[in-house]
Image (cartoon, one colour):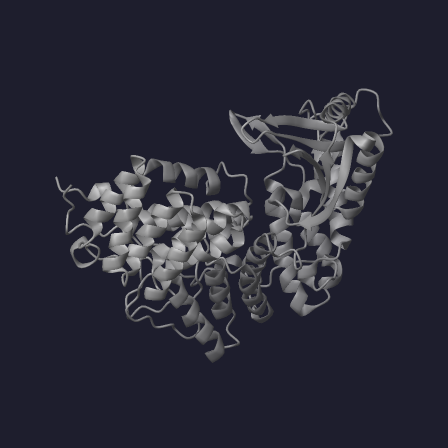
Length: 545
């Protein structure tokens, strides 16, 4: 089998085959084909010969690690990856393979760190491997509720392979108009112009260099809120959530423009909802777990709860072999005759892998639901324990949600409006938030520093609510019902902008173009961050025509 010597080398180095793996790539292909044919010992013998002859090359150890992984020999694959990194600490493919191992072991955070490292190291010619890495980052970051990082990775993937319709469909479904994410979690954030330009020489398309540039800039101009914002944004794109939040708090404390403070604060609130940010988060999910001893008793409990309308929206996920539902209680009304029943959302339940999980965003509600489960199911379930975890964005406003099983919200619009208004203006307004140093939004308005954070807290709440508000049909279009106007909440707080919006947009940098690198004379404070473009991993694709 002939291999094109001038094709991009599949090891991910970015070099042509002739100047990289050319001397042994044909034998690697032979070993892989032998393995596919079930000739394991023969394939192993070929690799032993290759390691004896070319053992000083990181690439041959990478190929060997891939071979071992396909054979299910993970410990040996780990050792081969270590050998590759000893020979070349910048071998991107080795980090990619190690990330794959961590992911298989369920260590998602460790896998993400390694995938991000690989994405930084791949050259623009390692096209297929880079695309695979970026899509892994997107997938895992979304699982951990880190959509800002996930969007950046998917943006880069789209720039890399714009001809792939499935990438456009994935992007539109996740971050486009049909998305269930609040706007703050799916928008494209921009750099802001800084007081001192960040000169870039020989741009490589790597975020690490931009991060380093802004880390130096905040040391040189520590009172520039834009420099801190840009640093926080770069860190968020790199998946460094805690350090991104730290930089954004610095930016907020220095910011004098209320509209920019609102954008910064809203981004910060998005990052605080991520996995790993539980210690700083304003919103948390409180979870109780049980092992299922008697599945029949559990199913009977579900049916009874559904009949009594204490459990609604039951659905069976056959693909994941899970059952999900929503726990509710009826909203009592003094006037009952002719009224459509409305239900408060209390929490969620899930049955998966032989376990029952019940959760709520309010700790007291979660404890009450758990007590009811213990009382009603008894020995049918065995307690496992409780935990606190990060929320989904719809959880942020779940306490304001009313459910109409018949979806007759218009007939009960006044009741819905009154309930939602009471939650936002009575309950939420007086609830301490960690992002406000433990103060309530109302009390935070008395502090010039914390007042700037309230802008983002309210805007984030509003955007989360817009994903949950009931809709109605008008002229063939779905439009949100007028349930609540957040101008009322801002008025209650006395939250007024001191700068007109037109003055805010005087100079933000252009939207990120992940595949574009700024020229050496262009300051990073006003130029798009670089990304990458990249080539084929499949060795069989290197065959000459």
